[in-house]
Image (cartoon, rainbow, N blue to C red):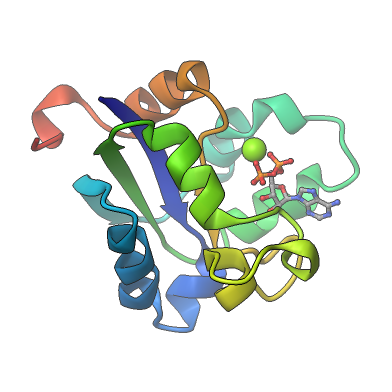
Length: 138
Ligand code: ADP
Ligand code: MG
């Protein structure tokens, strides 16, 4: 059993399609064991995405992620990290596979609808960044 952190990004919240994204998540068999709608501060977004500090897209990424509320959620199931990465699809929706969330909904490489942890180690850090154990119902 693994847990992974998912974020439904501002482009999806703005288009009122968080339910459609959740339906695709549920198709994988993973369970949404925690979920909340929050507005990230710049400080939070910078800390969450610290690994990308210094990259060309960093400022744009922080600006986008703080531009509207996001849905942060914990997904749980067997191989949750890789199952969700596969369902999300490639970062750039132009090269994402059919049937993935990003192929279906993403607008561009930056407005790409969802975030998912990229390893078990990141998942642990990212889940505890947003949730305490009492908020996770499994
Ligand atoms: P992923 O979200 O697929 O794990 P990364 O961790 O590499 O991708 O990047 C984090 C986020 O930064 C991406 O989801 C996307 O929103 C944004 N991003 C990544 N690369 C670019 C880029 N070349 N131009 C604009 N935004 C980007
Ligand atoms: Mg990443």
